[in-house]
Amino acid sequence: MEAYFDNSATTRCYPEVAEIVVKTMTEDFGNPSAMHLKGVEAEKYVREAAQILAKILKVNEKEIIFTSGGTESNNLALFGGADANKRSGNHIITTSVEHAAVGQPAERLEQMGYEVTIVPVDHRGVVQLEALEKALRPDTILVSTMYVNNEVGAVMPVEEIAKLVHEKSPKALYHVDAIQAFGKYRIYPKKAGIDMLSVSSHKIHGPKGVGFLYINEKARIQPQILGGGQQAGMRSGTDNVPGIAGLGVAAKMVYTDFDKKIEHMYQLKERLAEGFLKLPDVRLNEIREGAPQILSASFLGVRSEVLLHTLEEKGIYVSAGSACSSHKRKAAGTLSAMGMEAAQRESTLRFSFSEENTFEEVDYALEVIGQVLPMLRRYSRH
Image 1 (cartoon, rainbow, N blue to C red):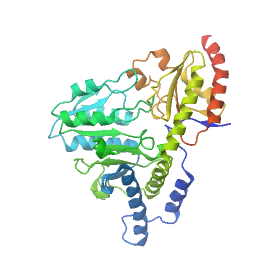
Image 2 (cartoon, rainbow, N blue to C red):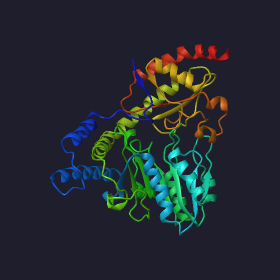
Image 3 (cartoon, rainbow, N blue to C red):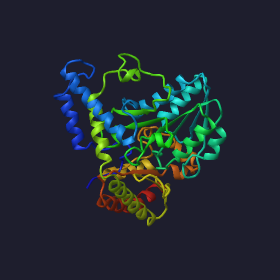
Image 4 (cartoon, rainbow, N blue to C red):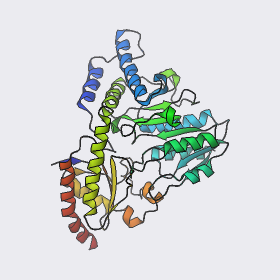
């Protein structure tokens, strides 16, 4: 049996997504900037995807900017937002648990002369609102937080953050990294006070190498990729039509029967959590109000890499922290920021679900983990 519990790293494409990707590569393969019929056909796919996404978010089509994925969306938000608004101030705020695609641009902006404040989180991994409120200043021009933490599933109070930002720092733009949240929550940026929102396609059963950044039409953003002036000059480069078309189909499908899918993920998570609590020396690193698709657990006495590869041999696929950084041998940033001790951090695995996972897969994982843990703990003591 195979059980894929690494859906926060990537998801399997819906068959309908694969179909439209192939069709736009082999039949409707025109350049959407071309003026002939093949170009018009290709442009139609791009426009339809923008319409789908705009409807889901309740925003305008022109506020959707297609990118190569979540990393580029985050980079465009941070560099583009800082660049366009530097006359209004020099201060940027982010948190101690951001993905590297926000954390590293923030470091670069600091090297470029911006003042960057890193706001701490509590023991659950949720941003401390009091600390954020203290950090906000009249010269703050950009605040960037995630919506759902990719390591433990902690959910940030984005509407409360937006309210604080706009009250205390009226010149500031509020950017939300929603890469683990889109498709798991109904998100309405205008209602929530979000100025920019990053989304990645391959987290929602779409193709890799494509995503988008929602940019409120009132927000000032400096383009970072220049060239042919595509997407109203905001992001030059020939549109990735197969990727964009696939993203549109995936987004439409992921929000179809939405409540049923989310409830299924919560039930999978609860079943796995209840099973873990019956095992000795296993700690859950998540909160009941955490995201539906992520369960982080520490298996004390066993290094996460050892357990990960043992499970892999049994066809169970999980992650040791974020897939984007798990190859680097360093303590997970979120777990450290939560104040977790080294022994617990080093024995932590992330299980992440999709609508396609089953209760049988959860039971299989619990059975295997129950069998291998005592053996691995005995081995690790020698």
